[in-house]
Length: 450
Image 1 (cartoon, rainbow, N blue to C red):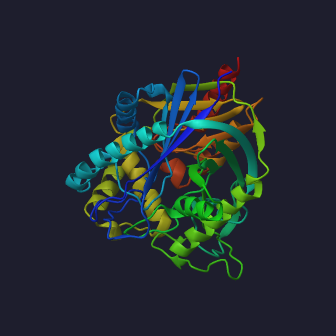
Image 2 (cartoon, rainbow, N blue to C red; image 1 turned 120 degrees about the horizontal axis):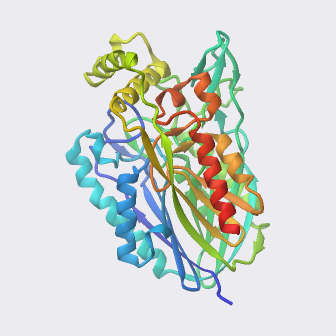
Image 3 (spheres, one colour; image 1 turned 90 degrees about the vertical axis):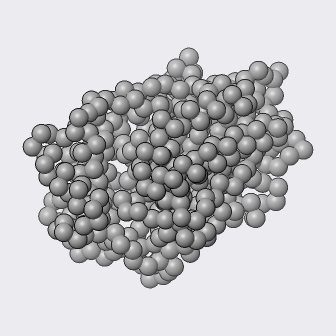
């Protein structure tokens, strides 16, 4: 009988100062490093099959760059490209990697080859570290750190991040998923490897700094708490969830200050979130259910979905708003806070899609180890997508991963398009994309079980 082998590799991917930071609609250049950024690779081998899972502390990597990088890693390692999964923690205080953003392109062009070479290194290190392993799974709980960020207002409108103690808020739209999926690999003669999965936006720190946000704190705190353990954080379905408590009780705003977009942020709060997620892992670390791994399957599948092209009458105003924003003249627009971000993002989407394309290809992925499945989603899915995928029949544990093998934007639910808000108004995909993503993921898992 073939035995599962698992290996681990870690490299530093911290950029030089002055490198553009991804995640906002304003230019930010790195001025300070609060904590080093990492890429963490986990290699799996079962019989003659091998697969690689690489998690990087960046906001996202477009498919046009992710796929060639998978090919580059494949060439260096011999692992088939369809068995390589590059997922991003989605930290908003990491470097802008996508070269076509054209913000200080010389800085991006200097960083990108370094980033790619570092991921190749991480993959090679993980493969060199392969050791016999047994696998266990569990589910912990991380209460009080994830909050729905879409709200129905008293006037009937929908707002994303409406501010703290806003009297015009009626109710949040939806609820959060506080479950933390845990995969533990006990290796013969090697460190234990833990994969932890929960979906929350890592936009807790802000500013012109470099930080891995709460996912990095989770890794560091867990590794300090449990000897000879390495942790990889796999961010889940977080498109409509962040850290902002709009009705905080006393003490809940400790280590937080108000930022430009009606959100409170703070490095200390990122630490708090990391402690909570690490605590959820420790809830089940010693009580995981060990299960046999007699099969391993990796697959990718393209999902084609229509684009959210603007109507002809919307284009002139979209150009006006987009031109003002590019010129640094946001003050001339009658909006502020998150509403300004929403309007600017919507205008950018309309200008981008003025002449098409009419559809987009989305690279979905699945990696299964015995009766546990990891599902890669190339963007920011809403929590409802995660719930639907986790409920796929017949699996002990399903872990959805956002920003994996592509970062193509938001995947709002059908209701969200009717309600409005930042995510739906900025999404480049036509309504129905969330449901298509969930259906494709579940169908992939069903196909693997056949």
